[in-house]
Amino acid sequence: MPTWQQLRDAKLDEYADAADGWGKVSSRANADKDRVDNGMFAKVHHTQKGEAATKAGGDIQQLSRNYQYLHTECGLIRTALNGLATELASPQKKLKQALEDAENLRFTVKPDGSVEYPTDSLVLSPGTNTAEHGAPVPLAPGKGEGVGSADANKGKAEDIAERIGDAVREAAEIDGRYAAALRRLKADPGLEVSAEDLVDAAADTKALQQAAGKYADDDRIPKGKSPQDNAEWWKSLTQEQRDEYATLYPASVGALDGLPSAVRDDANRMVLAETRAQTQLELNAIPKPPQQYLPNPGGSYPAVITNPAYREWQEKYGNRKPELERIRNGIDAVQGRFDATGKDGLPEAYLLGFDPHTNNGDGRIILANGNPDTADHTAVYVPGTGTEIGGIGGDLERANRLWTASHRQGADVSTIMWFDYDAPRSAYPTDKGDAFPEAARNEYAERGAPTLHTFMEGTRASHEAASGSGGHTTLIGHSYGSTLIGEAAQAGRIFDGPIADDIVVAGSPGMQADRAADLGVSGEHMWAMGAEGDNVPLGGSLVGLGEDWVVPTDPEFGGNVMKTDTQGHSDYWNEGTLSLDNQAKVIVGDYEGVTLD
Image (cartoon, rainbow, N blue to C red):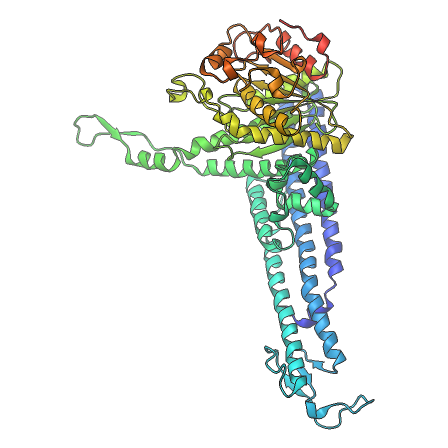
């Protein structure tokens, strides 16, 4: 427990100066991580092939993890020191005021915090600094019982002693909280940051969240606000406060629509790295399943019986192992996109959303090719039925192909794969065991529409903040993703104008509308594709996902029907196809170049 002298003499600005130093190290590590992720991978793709490329890629991933860990841990130290200095300022101020009051009254504060004071009979002679007679009487810190008593000095001394004691106790509580958190912030020797280290970093973050709650509280981060409100909150913070919130609450900051894409990417990559490490450690801890069947010891029918040990394993790990593998597969798909930066000209990636547990277990992954805050043209691709993070790789590849095809048009483009809703799992009767397919119901679109609408608002807000305008946006929906877009677009039309400049749908079963105008866009900016052999539009019209059973490829919907040269429901994004090229032309605003059916 600190003494009152230590509290009085503490130079809090030295803590703040030290925090600045740790903050600079954290920022440099983050910048170095970005250079590794967005520069070194590209050089490897250009200079190395085969096993050499694989080995170099693994080394680069390790270096990126090292910088990520350094960025996180040094950032936590910075936040802890700043929090300690800020919180100690209050009890130090209270102490100094109590000491000043004691000095003005000619009281003496003893080393143990007790206060000596002259009794009323020992009042000072007028105009002098000496007592008429008597000696001081010591008083240990108490509760101020003497206030208002016949001996006024005793009451004043008790009050001062109580204030000194309160200040010291408050400082001791603050010191204890931060000391415990700071003691955790240490790294194991060696140059390789392991999965255990990253899991420990996540635990360090939680510990500091508890310690620094009064200094930087998660409740101060906007929740349920508009993207514009989020952007204004972020703008109101100092750079140091922004760094601290992003380090201490990366999941909350990374989920805020309206914040700069680079900020969200940094925060979400921190969450991704720690989730990846935790997931792998949990998988490694699951033992191999025992033998499922054993010979029947009685030799009677049946000849084999289920092994009780296998049954126990199944109860404990049977559901958890597939769930962890699903999360790992999704994370690996995102990491694969990070590693592909520079390959075939792919730009840097921005992770704008990540949570493996939300949306009824389907998860959330939002990943951009190129910076949508500065691109002239931004396209947002929304996948459909059956989407979940374990199988997100194919949708990420579609966004990659959209970027490549659009970039070939000579435009500055960003393409975003947006998955942040509870997608229906079944597309037709008996699919996934559902007698009535979930995709035949509109409730999934209705629940997900506000989230998509807010994201599009946030994309516009962050672009306006960085570039001075909203840029040109295209919203692309596949299958049930188009139904979700229809719901979100109609919400936008009601409240604040078009959700996007152009809407493109492929294999749409209906958009909960009977004409393009219901979506807030004119027919000239509504584009639909229906490939030969794609029966989803017909199925959607039969179950009524279109208003009055109208689907976007119907002439009466009032939009443009684009020519396709692909087959079935899933090939609209095949490389080198007219189907993909038509989408790219819309994305860059080359409407005259689109081939119509």
